[in-house]
Amino acid sequence: MDERGHRASKLGNIAVVQKSKMYRILAFVLFVSIANVVGNPKVRCVHGVWSVDHCVCKENYVGHRCQRKMHCSSFMRNSDGSCVACEKYWEGPNCDSITCNSEFGTATKDLLMCQCTGPAKGDHCELLDTDDIYLHYNQKMEKWGPIGALAIIPMVACLVLCNRKAKHRHVARVERALEDQRDVEVDSKVLEELLHKKH
Image (cartoon, rainbow, N blue to C red; front, side, top):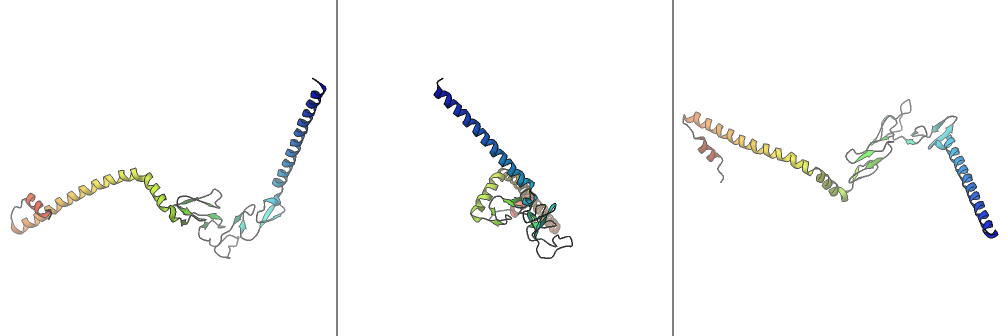
């Protein structure tokens, strides 16, 4: 290898070593920054201030980091600071757990937001978007169509049998009534034709 190639190889190795040192320094700085953020309790208080070993929350906020807003329906509080009554769509002693329209949404794990489905929108899935309402119910019917058909068939069969039984009972009642009045035998087939004759 000539001197030029040897020099280029040496410079390349130096560049790799310097890059490696730079990456180590950046990783160290990043690690120290993250440790400061995580280790610094003052950063944890979202709506409050750090006091010795815990967050002191501003009014209407609760939680270890003052991250949960209270949704009390009035300014009145119980002796322990909890709400007397909650605003609509909120529950719990501190009124900090959301409730959603159960037909169109579910609460997230932290109970702070609703995840809406179908034509619903709004903070609590309480508003219906009329542009999507037909699509939503058509999709529901598409899912339940075969099951609905299976449920309707026995109901129709039951209706037909009940109507047939009702006709026979009607003929029997009229037949008894006529026999009681005149002491005459009545032909039930003729009577049935007269009663159920279509005009």
